[in-house]
Amino acid sequence: MHYAQITGWGKCVPPTILTNKDLTTFMDTTDEWITSRTGIKERRICHCNFSDMALVAAKQALAAANLKPTDIDLILLGALTNDSYCPNTASLVQDALGATNAASIDINSACTGFLYGLHIGTNLIRAGAHKKVLVIGGEFISHYMDWSRREVAVLFGDACGAVVLEATEEAVGLIASKIGCDAEANHAIEITNLGSAFSKTSEDFLYNGWNFEGQEVFKRAVKAMSQAAGDVLAEAGITIDQVNLVVPHQANKRILDALAKRIGIPEDKVFVNVHKYGNTSAGTIPVALTESLEENRIKPGDYVLTASFGAGLTWGAGLIRWGERTTPLTQSDAKLPPCNKTALEILAPSIQRYTQYRARTEQA
Image 1 (cartoon, rainbow, N blue to C red):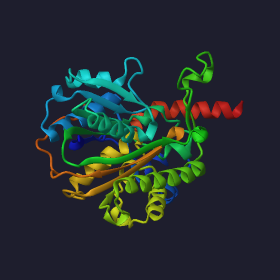
Image 2 (cartoon, rainbow, N blue to C red):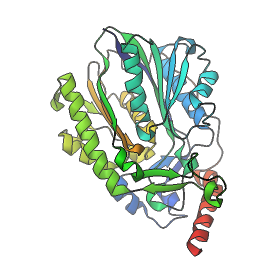
Image 3 (cartoon, rainbow, N blue to C red):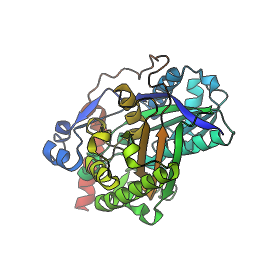
Image 4 (cartoon, rainbow, N blue to C red):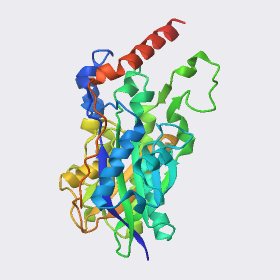
């Protein structure tokens, strides 16, 4: 029986930091208000294209696995903030990477994009359809942010991560997973004016709106992730006490704490980096997984539990049995183009547009 071992991993977090203090310079908020509600202290702001971040993360993952781009036969890219929808962004990454033998597929399930990709890639390898799969998850969410909406703007940041899956006969990798969708609540997270359902003739078409029902998301997210986590543990015949580390979607510290309590695992077994990056949507799990390895939080043979939820409301969970190797085989020197601007300087035109637009609409 084929399994799909994780043999490479990498991340790309933009160098430019937007702190809570920075946010107070243009919106009515405080560091205490943001931290107490979300656990977030800062987030990263991308100064280039999303595909640039995906390319850096992919090169790092390939180097960690000591593979050439031409070794990859499938690229799965989880994101909703793509460079373009036609052509798909996975094909842009394939071209820039030189992965000429890879089929290339975009997956838009919002924050669950990486976990969905991991589930799909693993099962394609186990079915014998592919042998070496690159799974990428990330987001350039600041590009679509309404910076006049405090309840949303403080939550998100930009980042990307990637892993390489390779066929193996060892019972390692994603050994159990479950994905699903709570579609009756699809309204709870929505970016408006993005897609063919919105009129291009409307003056509002140039401005992305946000619908984010925090309490509804919190309630459904904790329930769905905990149930899915319980299901994959039961499928694998593993108890929560045997889990060495939980690497969940980093949306909000309150959600992480509630998830840990509900599944019955100590907080010190839950990897948390939301304070550094905010919610990077499909980027949170691969970035957290990479940092877990960098910080020696994952040992050979460990059971790693992951869970996520996103717009749709999509949800999922997976149980990973880690292989013998926890360090990269080689290193990549790939990095983003240089940036000489601060986060506020990068965002200034967008902040001005949205604050002016908000003022006009409220006066109308």
